Image 1 (cartoon, helix red, strand yellow):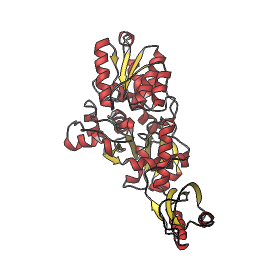
Image 2 (cartoon, one colour; image 1 turned 135 degrees about the horizontal axis):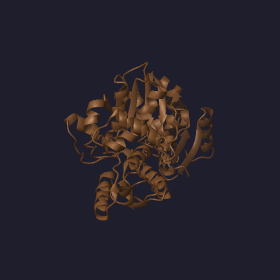
Image 3 (tube, helix red, strand yellow; image 1 turned 180 degrees about the horizontal axis):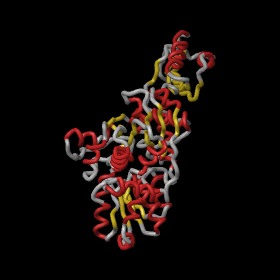
Length: 409
């Protein structure tokens, strides 16, 4: 495909219906109240493969010749495009080889294998895996399907915009995650073709903002490195074929910190019972950065393929960030009944003790010979401060322990 046109988008939208689930917009009372806008979530995390990527992969394969398919397909991906290509290839009955970074979560690797694809683990980041996939394609004659730097793939991803506008014709803002730029290119280009007044905001992790830097310099640039928990968007170089479309159709790019993704995960799971991976949470976190009110805003949740180990870590860190869990250290006299006294003070303040560490050897002073570290569940910052103050009032001289995470034994 040489150019993204309305006709190509319409064709892609019809074809991807064969492989996608209907992801109806979900009105969010919580995020609407928080942002002052009317927020409608586009939950692509609910797709069969757990992400939007199946759209572009399936449409791309549909445009290949029988000869191109028969050679076998190859791609590189941190996970979601891998599953999209593997699943689409299975439906077409063709072989697929997927090169994934060695750091790819095991769940994404196993899901990709479950669709019948061969998985090759190579490189520490996507860019290294992609270079190796190109090498294998040349050596073995495979047909390469790029995860983002392909206008046909981008047209398939753009079908999301078609669905959004059909369901919510008066949408004002669409928020789109950016890794290499395929999703954002498809969505922004089609959205502007359908209604030029729609604002499209790209969202990148601050630790991998390759598109924002490229736009700033007016050309495609490669970051020296990336550092983000949003592994699906950890891309050093955006697509050069896509860049002109981003320049033309994206109104703004917002970057969010990893800590914001952790809070967004808790917000989403507690208020909508939805699981989204860190890259998919970019647009949810970006809602707090919008400088508008009273608008109809659609954040696209691009995927939900988060493994349980990562999920556990994100939940713990999120609870700590929100002061829902905190640890406090107190020094006690080495006399009977002190532990009961501390526990009763916390209980009277409605705190819930979830972990205790008792150290009798911090001092030889028997009046303050025992350090007690208590991990407590609270309702939030105000409640935490209340508990700490009550411990202080009882003479325990509490000190809040700064920590990055805790392990629940």
